[in-house]
Image 1 (cartoon, one colour):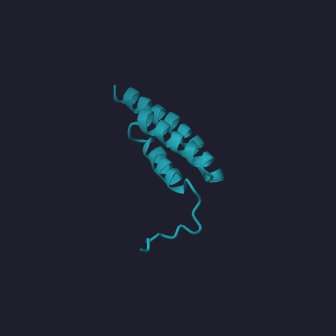
Image 2 (image 1 turned 45 degrees about the horizontal axis):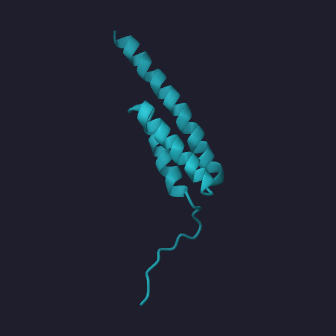
Image 3 (image 1 turned 180 degrees about the vertical axis):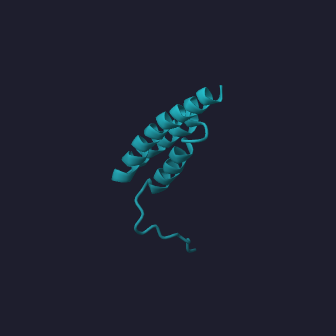
Length: 82
C-alpha cells in the first residue's frame, strides 16, 4: 500500500501557527483585542519554539503590540462616544 503525502518542501515547522497568529493579531486591532491578541501571541511564540525562528517571534511581539493598540483604540472610541 502506498501512502499519499503532501510535499512540505520549503516550509518551516510552525509556519501555519505563525500565519494564524498574525491574522489573529491583526484582528485584535478591531475585534476583541483582549481575547484575540494573547491567542495570537501564544501561537507566535509556539511557532518560534517549533522552528519558525524570526517570523514566529515577530508575530508574538506584534500580537502583544496590537492588543495594546486595540484596547487603546477601543477606549478612545468609547470616550469619544460619551
